Length: 145
Image (cartoon, rainbow, N blue to C red):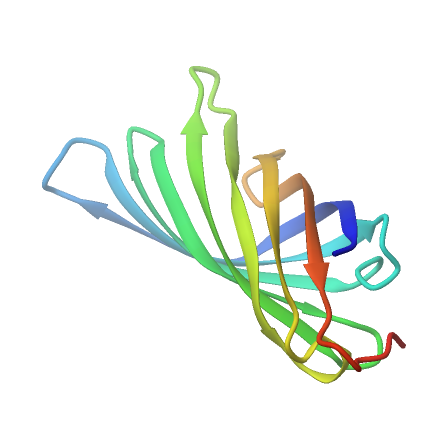
C-alpha cells in the first residue's frame, strides 16, 4: 500500500449552528467546506476536496463526523468518511484530530481502500488548514492516469 502525506487549506462554504437547551453551551453544527490538496502523491496532489460534517459540541469540546470527496482533474473521485475530536482552547483556537478512511471511488479509484489520520485548526471563522497521512490501495488492474 503506498503511503502518502499532504496538506489541505479550506474554506467553509455553508454552516448551520443549532443551540440546544439541554445543557449550557451545547451546539450542533452542520457544515460543508472545500479545500485544495497539496500531497506527496500525484494521485491526490492538486485535487479539490469537499467535506460535509456534523459536530456535537459542549463548551467548544466534542466530536465531528462526516464524509469527504476528492475530485481529480480527469473527473474521477475518491470518497470516504472521517471522525475527529474537536477542541477549543481558552483563546478560542479550534483544533481537530482524527481519522479518515476511503469507502469508494470512481474511475481509477473504483475499489480504493485505505485510511489514515489528520490534524487541523481553524485559522479564521471560515478558513481551515490541516495535515494528513495515510496509505491506500487501488483495485488490482486499475491504472493510474
